[in-house]
Image (cartoon, rainbow, N blue to C red; front, side, top):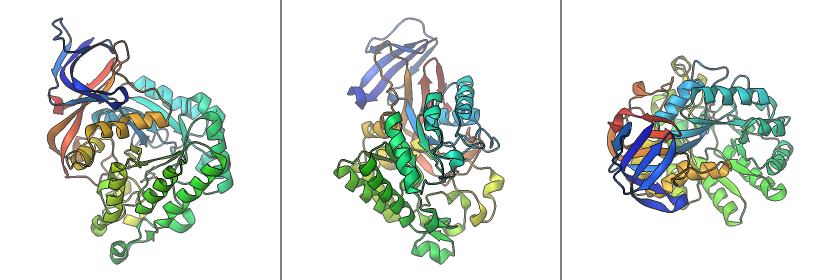
Length: 428
Ligand code: DOR
């Protein structure tokens, strides 16, 4: 199989590469990158003039729901959604049923994913047995089975001794702990951010300190005992300040933000639409601005989708009873291109760092390269295509998104991952 990509603007800051090239990919391997015009017969010749070709995008925060909740999403539909959203690789969270806290479940997911193909799936295993926050999982066995990181996402590890031990194991195994920062005693049954708006709307609220206290404590533990630590979906101005302060002191903390925490805020909750119910909750406009400043300043390391599919019948209930989460694999690139690239917050090379390079560095995974002889792993982004977000067109099984109806400028239009590829209808 030969694919010839013509006039690609190839951008890979990890290789200090930025230029217009023709790329010849043969049986999943980069054969040539240069200015030659080819000429030999190929199976696909695609003129990608005006499009960016970047190292394959990596979503390090996806909920695939398999095993156990396949009515929301399964490995095959999650992979299809990832490919449609421009990702060549994803890391799946372990809050499935059963929880991914045993080597068998890690192997099950990785086997199923390999069978599905197209997108590379990595598994994050639970920090604690059953994600109960009490006893550490068999972290060494899980790492040996292929887990790339550990997280109880959906819940926090609130017990300081358990977190200390987890950090110590993370050093030994050289695999990060990904913490969902939440003091559950403070959040109780609150389902939205505590702010003047949400109190007026009559919601049960959770205070921002629930996130910030956990993050601060973890950074203290990290400084005292060492370890590898990544804060998932940070959402408040205070969290950005805590990260800034820690980084200034040389503490090796990394963090991610999601498109929904960057671009949606709690004033949008006036209609009691549970598609806006996520955890951590949507915060205020000032928090969104602080997260965007964090992106600009390089305090944020990763943009991750927190793709959290839920079925219609689960979301179409009273707000307080609905589960937390919105899907993100198929909206992340559109949202980020529209709001960060076109609004001039960051250039495309920085977006490649947030969406491709930094996730792999944090998870100790090899970076894709465009060197001849290497396996092709790339995403094609059209910066200028304009489209209206219609959840009915998604490959995901679920539709729960707060971006419904948004007009985006910019989209992922295809991926090549070794000898597998997917080109969306936006490329044609
Ligand atoms: O909104 C969320 N949904 N936040 C989480 O932490 C968990 C996730 C889920 O699993 O649905």
